[in-house]
Image 1 (cartoon, one colour):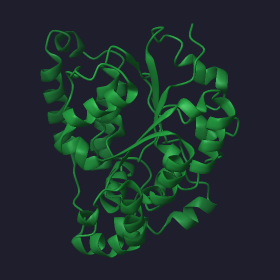
Image 2 (cartoon, one colour; image 1 turned 90 degrees about the horizontal axis):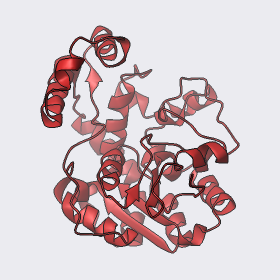
Image 3 (tube, one colour; image 1 turned 90 degrees about the vertical axis):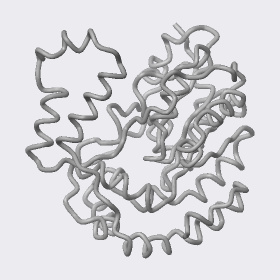
Image 4 (spheres, rainbow, N blue to C red; image 1 turned 180 degrees about the horizontal axis):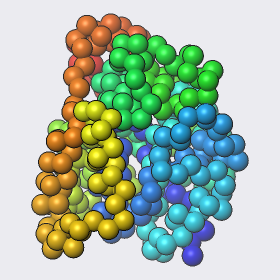
Length: 307
């Protein structure tokens, strides 16, 4: 069993393609990423959060080193190990994350950091749409300002839509702390995914000629249920039926066909809300200063984020 911490971390931002990116990278024969994404260990090591709401940071929240190491124990001996947790970029957690990386990772100077960022308002809205399937009941223009009261009530940070969209200070801290940091944009993933993964393969020093078969497939796309009934039916279809008579037949069809069927079902039960233009424009002003400082830091033109 391997007793080794990851060689690289995908630290966010949330709803910026981190799930897709992790899936693309994990296809590489020399890269190992645990099947369970979002372990959050460096954010909550020996300090489990006391959320009053159901945990929605991911399927698990790992707080002990031994449990964290267990997720990498099945990795091949020579594999490059990676992990992805979007909480690592959150403005209220990144200092603790960096401190814990230094504390627990004996080779922290060698660890490689991958950051992918999405236009802040679009990111916040996509996150909001996802939360509509959980506890969110407010309109977006009200929900973005509800965090202060929700935090007092112990709501999970997954409802801090604006807070998760401020990037400059966290990115600056990673760039200044670690020797190996790569910052990408969501547009890179959307418009030139092959270039993106090849560049990361070079960064991780693995074969950059490898092309993932799942490249271009979208993971963790945001949809909102049409109604509580539709959401219940979807949950029942996915998790609630112990014996699903469709499963034997599904085994005989290709993964591509399965994905088309899955997306068809999702379209019947879910909708994709649209962001109001006035709300978009008003919120862009909230992030203007952060965006301008960020573009100078990462040397990328972000003017299109403000248009």
